[in-house]
Amino acid sequence: MTFIEVSPESHFPIQNLPYGIFSTAENPNPRVCTRLGDYVIDLAMLDESNLFSKQYNLFNESSLNKFMSAGKNVWREIRQQLTELLSSNNSKARTEPSRSVKKEALHFIQNIKLHLPVQIGDYTDFYASREHATNVGIMFRGKENALMPNWLHLPVGYHGRASSIVLSNTNVIRPHGQVAVKDSPPEFVASRSLDFELEMGFFVGQENNLGEPIKIENAHEYIFGMVLLNDWSARDIQAWEYQPLGPFLAKNFATSISPWVVTMDALDSFRVPTPKQDPTPLPYLKIDSALGIDISLEVFLQSESMSEAQLISNSNMKYLYWSIEQMLAHHTITGCNMRVGDLCGTGTISAPYENGYGSMLELTWRGEKPIQLSSGEERKFLQDGDTVTMKAYCQGDGYRIGFGEVVGKIIRNA
Image 1 (cartoon, rainbow, N blue to C red):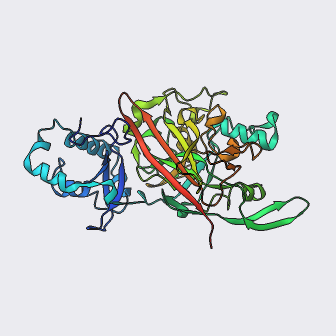
Image 2 (cartoon, one colour):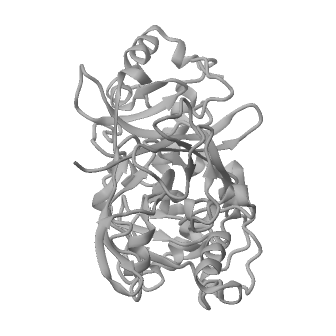
């Protein structure tokens, strides 16, 4: 229980306590906060007012990087102290000075501005959903050759563009690029096949030295938390450019993330086994513990003529073939050194049923089966003015651990 009333449907009960960066009109300096129900709590103020067991000096920062670099023991200390401080039955929390500070540190969500939570150095996007990889493979290579020979042996990934990672509610400008034309030279046009990709992302909170891989059994200690992620994709640009080196301009124009970083400690009780991996992964990727996470995922689409958004997909992270720990271990097996703030995406998360596919490419089967909207319109891919909203949460017994939303509207550059 907490001194703030929180609805059972809220993504932000006391069991969650995610981290973000916020500012207010009265204090425009971005700083670290947590969220409880419809309120954010200024952690810099709590720290400066000596409401923690000691002063940490980690929260008067414009990103979570300094806090993350403090290490897992500090992450857990802060989480435990926040849980106690915000609980309604905590004796320290009931003292008059504590009540006064907490009230001053409390801000209604509508009265604050959120910022990108992490200073992101590098961004790697994986391709970890067997269902998604199979669907795309069938479209382009046929059923017999749907999965490439390496796919069941390692988490496939590519290096993305960190500079174009944006916060939820940032408009997405339709990109231009080269598109193939049958029996003619390519043409330069605005993408006609703009798509979303339903993903989760995780932030690296600890570094490994160059030349020292992160072992699979220790990988969880390096992961600070997760965000909801939309990897926008221009499919027609991608189809022309991707051979032989993979995605480039088709994915470098925007990647949207949620403002709240949900810690792995908040997600641990929702761990589930990953799907059976056959063939057995090589020893550096093999681990017996449950590494999947049961996170419900939803995608909504709203055209400019619609009064409300329409649910078009519902998936779950538990279907991912490769776990985030396996992704991190594979990423570093060469000795690649990860840095605090690095972001890794899971790749599109598609369920083993049609209304759980994680992209328009799959939902419409390359445009052959358009989505029928409640407005009477249909969509093969995203049109100008369309708004895509993604939601993610773990369902507990009477509470939810949620990520909020990732929202993006497609606009055309004048």
